[in-house]
Length: 262
Image 1 (cartoon, rainbow, N blue to C red):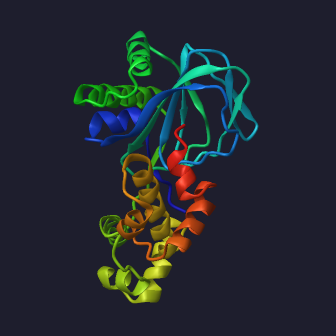
Image 2 (cartoon, rainbow, N blue to C red):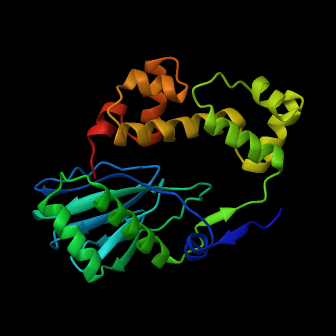
Image 3 (tube, one colour):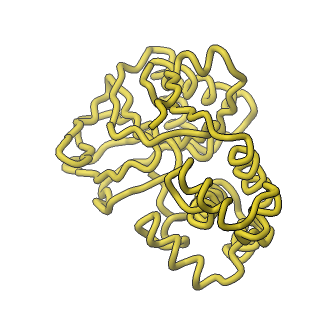
């Protein structure tokens, strides 16, 4: 089995024009924090102004403190624990793929510069100007660079597979059967399915469904499109089916997901 090329965060951001998308951010006073399992296709960054909460993943517990930022990778299942009232700042960050799930919650000290920005957002959570967006992108960049973990695992995929994945991502709304994808690769269908599954460890239609679900989750979080419009944009022809597979992947339905801020 070939060894993957491993690239840490700090190297990636220094050597590439990496897109950082702030999906959602804000601040809330928490009196009650839902303890449901949370599962997101993007990074989450938390700061709190008190000692009233904890995060749990598997057998790991992380106390939230005013002197640090908590960073949760995509696809990490996590539970909240809340035992006192506190204010929380949260930021949801999407960055360029490919990425690989990193099975750990991180905690790093918060700088005075970032602490000032966070407190300004908590005081004025509804401002959404260009300067604030740029400041938040800068915070996200510095926070992720400071992790310096081998998160991106860029396997050397065959050109046909990397090209068809890019084709999927650009045409989520379209009818993309295995026959269509195999024709794009100029391969017999069975050979295409076998090669794709061998290189990605997942069948092409399951891979396609997952990236469609990820795209729909981001639209639910950052847009005002209704669910029917999101279904259309992401290639789901039937709302009930979309709701069912969305709930299976994200542990809650699309409507609840849109309402769940942190």
